Amino acid sequence: MKVEDIMTTNVRTVSSDKKLGEVVSLMCIYRYSGIPVVDDGKLVGTVSESDVLGKMFPKLEDLMDNMSTVDYDEQMQKYSDVVHVTVKDIMTPVVITVKPDMHILQAASVMVGRKFRRIPVAIDDKLVGMVSMGDVHKAIYQSTLATRFQ
Image (cartoon, rainbow, N blue to C red; front, side, top):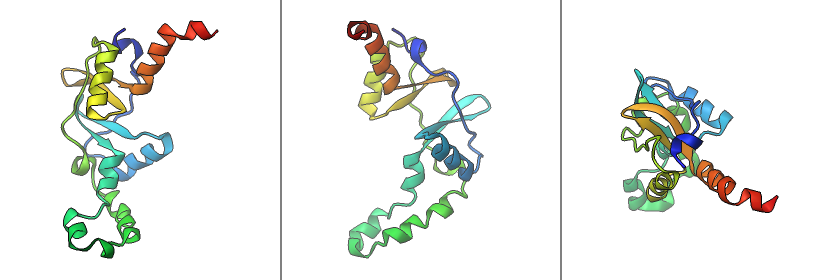
């Protein structure tokens, strides 16, 4: 079974010049943990919850100096600063992708190896879909076990 057989093709994307406030709204409303970044039809990065929330974490130097003085409630207030930047300011520019003609278990092994829950599907630099671990699991279940339990 190939990735193209199970991938989602209707993928919401954002451009790198989009204000982060709009993107985090999409993340929270639709429960997206990450969104592909596409400029001029080319996949140029991803923006994830980790990218957003990572900007609120104390710097390593601050933690090393004196962890007991870090005010985590104060750190949370940085969120309002983070949402005013653009996607290109915090996105992860290196994109790991899989190809539509890749076997689903090969795609799953890429996700496991990278600790991803989902991964963009691309041909060259053009985004053609997304596939998740849930998609792979459901496909394997349906093709091997679903009929046994009916």
